[in-house]
Image (cartoon, rainbow, N blue to C red):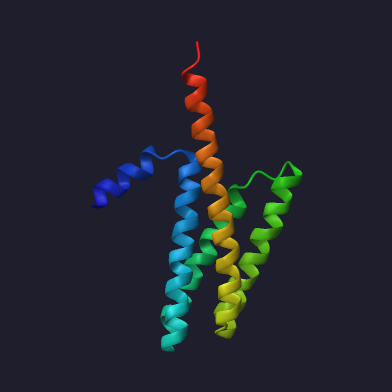
Length: 127
């Protein structure tokens, strides 16, 4: 299984890697929420910190030379801030808010990948 995952990561497009990051972030947020519900501060910190790391990675790799990129950076910064608040204050509401934004980004990104594939497929079939 690890070999399969490693191969999938090595052959993934940048768009697919971004999708994997969004999905991993959502997984860590869900695990963080469960840790909050169970009163497990160590697990909460572990999982919410991992979600924070993913958002920071998305921020660092984001192209900010356009208005859209600048807006996304501001949204990532907001998500990161809510994750920090959730972790420090054991705040499930802040975690839920961050999760909703990440899910929205993921769903939008999924559509972008789908449209890109359709466009490339259609262009490839033309002579």
